[in-house]
Length: 218
Ligand SMILES: C[S@@+](CC[C@H](N)C(=O)[O-])C[C@H]1O[C@@H](n2cnc3c(N)ncnc32)[C@H](O)[C@@H]1O
Image (cartoon, rainbow, N blue to C red; front, side, top):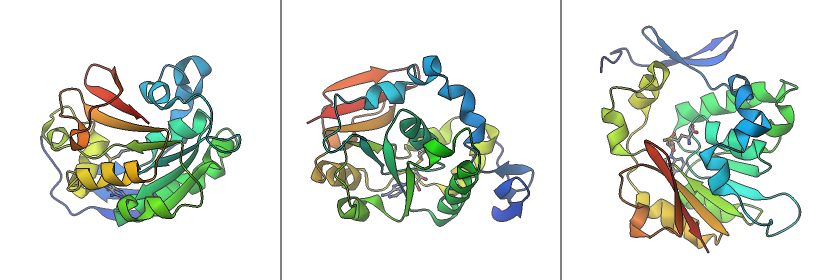
């Protein structure tokens, strides 16, 4: 895969904060996800099916932690399906893009209500998960898997993310931190053929062509 050799830099553009390197650019963008919100589409999303719970543990709004938020697309789907989501992101550049995308989403009346349920938390979720003010119903983990970096099919905009992200170096730390906050369910996104995270056998799996969601019900 050809990758831009220029060091990526953040630039404030009229459309929003943008990461630029050569002719590649990337910004967080929830407005472009509106077509995925139609009820038929949203309920068919594998992640939404995987994260479904019978009833929230406390109160009426289910709470999820996205411990590896990235640009927040998965969190957005969880929030659209009704969850209040705490989004952890530890990479400063990705965190800046995510924060900017959330601010713009709050100004878009079609998705502002969804964005209002997305609470950004900068920093490492392994340390931060246990300090949240609410007990989570679901913890969602999507750590970067080494194989993803080798794919020649990565969309152009994600080539830039590949320059910033490193494969997750503490998978056991993530799963152990998730188990420690005792959610009703832990959902883990994995490449279809990857080993299970932390050696923990899932209760069940929802499988697609290239990825799968391992669900640990407690
Ligand atoms: C594969 S990406 C997640 C993509 C995301 N699911 C989405 O929908 O855009 C993984 C992200 O998790 C972040 N990350 C990995 N370990 C983390 C940790 N312990 N705490 C916070 N962020 C973490 C990485 O910086 C990276 O941005």
